[in-house]
Image (cartoon, rainbow over all chains, first blue to last red):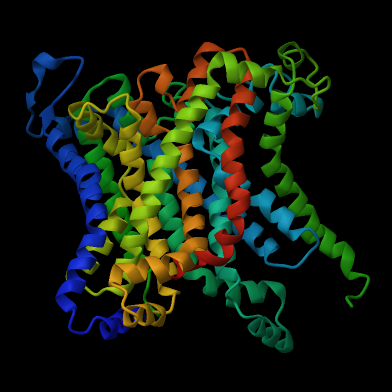
Length: 306
Length: 279
């Protein structure tokens, strides 16, 4: 790292004082992160081994491995929610990646009104999960929603569909809203990387007579590899943990059709007020993510030159 | 000049998919604007209308004055402005420290900051609820300021490190030779040059704090303390049938974040995203 070497030249003889300043500058961050992030995490692991239920305070106390035994052996909701989480993450990340890539490739070309098109393509980035839920629930409305109106007019459906209450439609409906909101993230990350590809490479390909697909698969895609790996990992973690969209669109229903593991944790904590069991679920979910991230980074050989 | 026969292919392969995607992306916003500008009786009458004719602002007036969106807006603004100020202030010094100093535990500190990005809010709300209960900060905006500041600090500090590294160290050296202390040199030479970066990171964290839902939902128990996201959520329960007010409330929550985005978008591609991808 260049800046560090330079600072040594400036701070020669003042090394002790420099060290003090460095620690002073990062102290607020360390204090905040320790108190409001690491201490709570430690707490989660503590409560995971406790019975702690605001609804049944008389039964509070050490639980040993009770909570974990219950999760892995008796709790069918856990298994179901893990399955929903898996589907959710795969659908979200893959669709967002494909559409994000298409949009980034389009915006990387020169055309009229590119600035305006870019603004429109990226604006859902600024929309919160709650707002996404509001906007889409109005469109999904059974009687006055626009989707039913359009599909009925086109003759694709014959009756009004309750998109968010129907077991077979609720997951794709919520997923569409999530994809809508997540596309800009991928588009931004990929476009940023695309703009670092030098045009000379493509010109050389043109000279060699490469077609568009060859250029994409042999030049563009390898160049984007690191950006895609990073964006996919960040988004997977984010989508696995995200709860605001589902919570406000369906609350996890109907009949738990959209209850992801994170949604289940929040319901256990907020609705059931069962902090001990919720903490155990949170600990399990944390380890699932940790193992995933390690395997993913190893398998994708992230950060290594090949 | 491209040959003429190229155009139909370009329309088919480029403009047509683009218009389809654009429609998909802009439609929810269009529908919200349309609904917010209509009388409730027009919204619920069939067949549905695609344009808000006749248009009205009554939904906005009701949402703002009667439903309490003026209150939610003020609360959101308070939490966001205070959090963003703290985040920006702290991240200057953390970013400076990471860029200019070499110190023991630097790598561990970087790792600690990255690790915070992986901690799910759903995991933290339980212990944080108990912590803020013990601190007597439940139903108090300072609990949101504290947690939002903490959550935004890591990312912003890493961005700020990049901005500080872009400022030549010779300027500080010159200032120190002229008799400035190290901190004096930072305030005189580094911070003025950091201002574009500062504004960008501030706008970034503003969008994050403005949109935060789960902590506010967990910690704010009385209506007078609601921020916009939970205010909106509470509207669903009470005004189930009233689409117009819901849409108007959504617009009120949406506009500040959208304005920040329009300002920010040039940084999204050229500066910040590129820097964060390169690591």
